[in-house]
Amino acid sequence: MKRIASLFLVALFAGALTLGAYKLFFEQPNYVVTANDQMPVFKTSSTPTSFKGAGINEVDFTNAAETTVNAVVHVKNVTMSKGRSSLAEFFYGSESAQRPQVGTGSGVIISPDGYIVTNNHVIAKANQLKVTLNNNRTYDAEVVGTDPNTDIALIKIETDKGLPYLAFGDSDHIKIGEWVLAVGNPFNLTSTVTAGIVSAKARALARVDQSFIQTDAAVNPGNSGGALVNTNGDLIGINTAITSQTGSYVGYSFAVPSNIAKKVVEDIMEFGMVQKGILGINSINVNTPYAREKGISEIQGVYVDIVAEDSGAEDANIQSGDIIKQVDNIKVKKFADLTGYLSTKRPGDEVSLAIERDGDQMTIPVTLKERQSLVLPVMGIVVKNLNEDEKKYYKTKKGVKITGVPESYRGYPLDDKVIIAVDDQEVENIEDARKLFAKISRYGRTSITVISKDGEKERFIFQ
Image 1 (cartoon, rainbow, N blue to C red):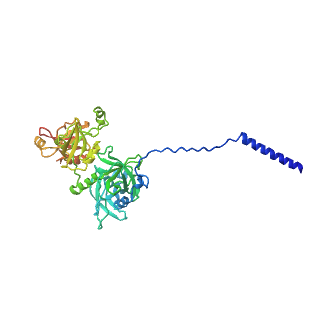
Image 2 (image 1 turned 90 degrees about the vertical axis):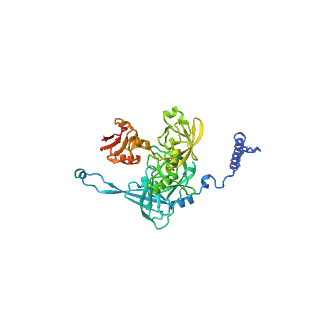
Image 3 (image 1 turned 120 degrees about the vertical axis):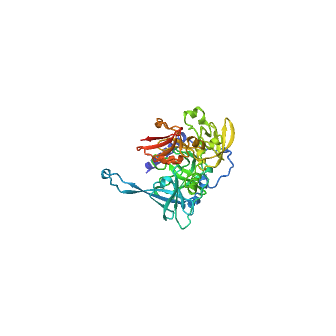
């Protein structure tokens, strides 16, 4: 028993000795240091901030969405297409059965009595049009008029009740960064609302002579013809196109500005066709060596290169080398700014051009005219309407004067001659010429009757 007690005391003494040595020689002290220095103070803006947080939370889309969805419709286009050719059809001339093809898009009701604006490509070649409202009621629709140049079409449904509709807003005064909603029927999903901002104004797209509003509101197939509205619910654009390698939305969408769409609709309703006021100038692509050589690529405005004969610009003494800075109250930085605004004007309208000429600033009023010249389809010949002096000179009351011949037809003596007939159909003006040349087949035979400066009639055969 004494032995056990001795061992316990030895063990206890050894443990105490070991713990003391560890505390003395190995354990590092852990100190907490405090200081009386104050935190640095930085001066900040005294502008009050919203308790709602960031700006996006302060925008209320609900009222605009509720107003818009009931005025945006689903448009179904049924076209009849011919099936694949068979051997029987090839040898015996039998006709294969026609097959219905259905395309869908959107439209916007713009009056309580059933007028609807949509895209021309939504209703093109339609054999049957159906319009479905947000309340799922479906109506037959008829085409009132179209304008392929702006891709705008006007259709109408008959109803005995007043319909919800949207008022046109002023697209000239929208701002980059402004919130917008796109409303339509993508992928047949009715009443779809997406939000974004105005990314750019007066955006020009390749091969399209048109000025667009660019947004980042999601737009997909089926949205075409739908509404682009601001947060007040005002119609500021008709959704038209996307830029995509996949066919679906990737961040860019484009809308026809409401001021252009409104003018097209009004022209169709009043005149049956679009009345376009022409200024009569040509500009230069700023991305060319010629433009860089002359320093044109660095200017802010539209450089006037050529002034068209018998145009409003010529009458107002606009000169080659002038730089257009502003039209009415709209600042002009590029050609699309100018053409976009002029697309809202008619022949006879007067606009005020602020221009720079040899370093001097001046303001010149210009009265717009009807288009006097154009490039004819298929053959690419440039023609113009005859003025009174030319009618006397060529001794004719109708016809169009050839002012430009493409390289492929330079072997024919066509310069300065007047076309009076195409395939024995009379040509009175450039619109007649455009329609007749559009019917020409590249693989068929075409005859063009002209008058020379000597007053002699000549006929050219093209095959």
